[in-house]
Image (tube, rainbow, N blue to C red; front, side):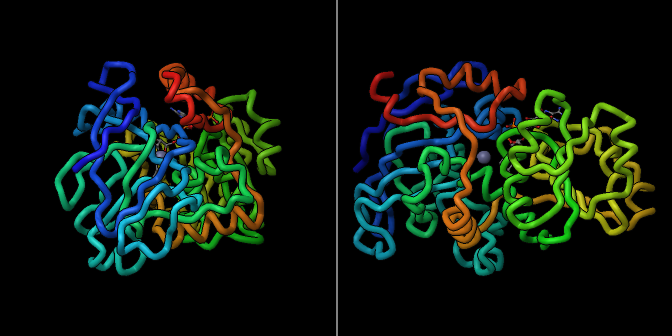
Length: 352
Ligand code: NAP
Ligand code: ZN
């Protein structure tokens, strides 16, 4: 049996998103059914809806920053009950037995995690559909609890932008005394500033947008460097122990490498394509620098991040939209005009 669901979908890489009716499975024994209240709009939604990473599946219902209320649970679910406020991020399942899953590193599941949308369910082989919809069915291990203390619409982006910036900052032990930088002030970047500041680091923002300086300081940046200004870039040569690079498209890493201190690490979370232009290895060797990457974060770590946010009252800075305005919102994300995350109020689906 299946249930009929209303949502918004892309039918091809070039069609705008529009209303779409589709089927979800009835809950299995360990499934949680969630009525979606809010869903954040991640740049990854655009990359995938427009097939910029290749292999996209259509129709595609994007959305992996989901906050909602539990409306029913399968008989084996013990952690959640009807009415609970919960979240779902980029994954809805994984193999649960490989070395990565055993270590709580589900995004790196050896058999491949099941993505919230643009994926295939590992049990029934049905396509997965994301959060731009009224309801979702998710394996209980991939559901996290959200404190009602938080502004729920502003908490939605924590499920992807939040954990994707939290996880590398924790992995590389950023804390008091760390001198770090974030590249790009968008959805991920603004959470990177907030978390690094809350962890006690001295934080610099690299931006191409001169107009974002005051906002960056409000969000947690101690310093702002206009990356298009060679003088400003030279002034921060060999400074940072860690740089979180959130730029969504291929870009030149070389100018940023020179700003890493000896043993410094640059961590890519934005671009998925090959590095272009090539990295000058001299900049890596002559500083014992590392180029690394990171993908979202594990489920236990996501809960830890959400609990930290509840304790420190950290949420995203958002602009709430009706779902009918999703295509215009995509255009504003692409022109770096998002301040700093769009969140869809799913109640607007009824009107659409
Ligand atoms: P976003 O809101 O569009 O922010 C990206 C920011 O990067 C922009 O606001 C802009 O900031 C800067 N930027 C954009 N194009 C640039 C370019 N060509 N060169 C230099 N800077 C540029 O995007 P997002 O939602 O934060 O996502 C960022 C990237 O992370 C996307 O590619 C997304 O797919 C990816 N992502 C990865 C993971 C993961 O698990 N690793 C998770 C979520 C998202 P300024 O105006 O300040 O320059
Ligand atoms: Zn995302």
